[in-house]
Each structure stands twice: as C-alpha cells, then as structure tokens.
Length: 156
Length: 307
Image (cartoon, rainbow over all chains, first blue to last red):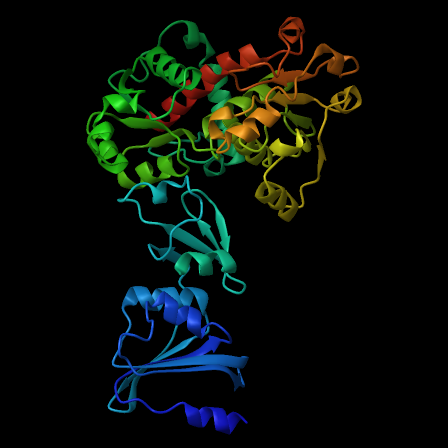
C-alpha cells in the first residue's frame, strides 16, 4: 500500500518538496501560498501517506516554484516538523528542517481587534512562542494568546 | 540599597518587581511633604502627556505630580487637535514629541499602544492606560493605598466588586497583587465576570479564588479590602449588552453591616452609581485618599525614572 502511494509522487526537475507535513494540512498550505492550481505549476499533493516519523503525513511537490522567507516562516508556524527540499536538475540541493523561531515578527495579524498592531502601519505584529506543539503564541503588545486553530484561521 | 528606575519604561505592572514596588511606596511616602508645596527635584525636566482618550484624574494627577516636583508639562488630551487628525501615525507623533521632553506619559484606547511607543523612542515611557488590559500606575496607586492604610499587603483578602471583564485597573491590580500572599474574591454580574483568560491565568499560577455573582453581607465580612469598579461603558462593543447590565450592582450600607472594623473600600474613580454616597461618611471609605495617594505614587515614579 505504502509503495503504491509513493509511486504516485513523481520526481521533479526544478522546484520544492515540502515533506513531513502533518496529515491533512497540505491543502491549507497551498491555500496559504496562494496556489489555486490555475497558475500552471505542476503540483503533486500526497495526503495521509504512511510515515515512520509522524504515523501519517502530507507531501507537496511544486515544479518551478520556490518559497520566499516569509512563506517559509508561515509554513514553519503551522507545520513545525516540516522538511523543505529545494530541487535543481532532479537533485536535492538544499534540505532544510524548518524550525519555528522563538519570536514571530510580521507573519500574522493579532486576533485582538483593538491591538495596536492592527491599527498602526508602522507597528509590526510580534508574537512570543509559548508552545510549539500544540502551537500557542502570545502577542507582545496586547498579550492576546492565539492557539493553533486561531493561527490557521488567520493565515488563510 | 537604593533602587533606581532611571531610564526605564513602565508599560505593564509586571515590569516592576516586588522590591521595586516597595521602594516606590517608600519614596511616595517621603514625598508627601511636597504634595502640598513644591520641590525643585525635577527642575528643568519636561513631561509630555499624550492622551488619546479622555481622562481627568490620571492626567491631572501626572500633571500635578510633575509640577509639585518643579518640572514642566507639555502635551495634549484631544487627538483631534493634533497631527494625528491629519493622518500622522502614532509612532511619528511620539518620535517628534521625544525631542521636546524627557519622559512620555501615554493613554490610548488600543492595547499595546504604550509598548509600541516605548519601542520607538529613546526616552522613558509610562503607560497611563492602554485599551482594556493595562493600567500599571493605577495598580501601583491601589497597592500603595492598601500598603499605606493596612500597613501590609500579605495575608489580606481582597474582594473585587463590579465590572471585572472590562476594567484594566482590576486586571493590573490582580497581577500586582500576585507579588504578595493574598486571597481573592471576585463578585460581579454574570455578563461582567472575569475574562476566561484571566481565570485560566490564575489557575495556571495555582492561585485560589472565589467567584460569585452577587454580593452578600456574609461575603463582605470576609474582606480586608473591597475594590469597587464602575461599568466600563466605553469598552462595550455591543450597546445592548451595556443596557442589560447598567445599574445591575451597587455597594450599599446593607452590605457593610457585618464587615471587619478595619475594612477599607477603594474605587479607581470616577464612580457612577455603583457605590452608595452614604458610604463616603463611613471610616471604610478610602477612595478619595486613594486619589491623594495617586499623586504621591506618580511623584515617586517621575522622580525615580528621571533622576
């Protein structure tokens, strides 16, 4: 069964492979990256693939598309154990295990509507990571605590 | 050992350690002779008041404190009269004003505004109330009033009565009280109960507390301090919610039938109708003294932050 699923995920020439995504999050990641499927990239999405590390996992392969630092940070936020592989000429030229930093700056907005970061363009949002799994972050300005679900909602 | 707050910001009550609090209290008491006269300890210093939200006593209290210590005061209390009304950002306004002053005191309707200003400027910043969450100088005033009137804070039972959901004074005071060994009783109408995150916060710190939806004379008997707050009408996002709770609680003489002889009643003021005027005549009423203590604490803070 596992072999069968792996075979469906083909090698790509240039692009990225986002591996070890928590099962069921791949579509959310694509949505967050603004990828609808209409852009013309060759995209392979594998969901609920058996994984030794995670039990089950999702994988995304995108041909001809790389990630900006901000996109990498967003992925690290909702998928803390993810591995990002950069592929050039069918070879993995960089393999990066994404690690959520202790402080998250400017990636997402605070859920508190009266937080100053939602009103002052010069004030970037800043969150302190209280817990990585389950994700829990605290706004450094208004001390509002956001959990994983809230972060997911605000990234879409 | 003398404790200095020189060059520091005061954004949250959590910025102040217990030792620093006690040092502020001692300084406040030592400055009492100057509260009715004048000192020149801050001569040549300028305090800028940036009040983006209406305030009478906090603003006047800071202004009086600075003037009693010989300093000067500039600022505004009506943002519609400033460049903000022309579209200038809060940060730009603060960066301009830091060139004219030695310290900024800010009040703002949004949470985190004082921190944002403190991050942007080089001079010390005092948060004089930001949004519904933080009012550290009021908490210091309340703590000082308890310390001064009771001679201690440890071992006391503090009963909070009123709007515990939207009162930033309550939130800051509760956090300040966590530096001491106190018992908490929270009494409020259902709709104005302590926020869930506050309840969770107290639980996570293993702080025991009692929560009730109405005040009885039996409950009042337990208290060493009763802290009353008005309904924070300006913080309600739903006017109908305000209408439902308006006038729903009031501390009256009946509640005080069996209280401890040395009970003190505090209120951050202004009051509306949650505190019977009859109580003013009782020895328990300390809220006007609390206003005077507010002046002393702000004098102490300004002196300790600017010298």
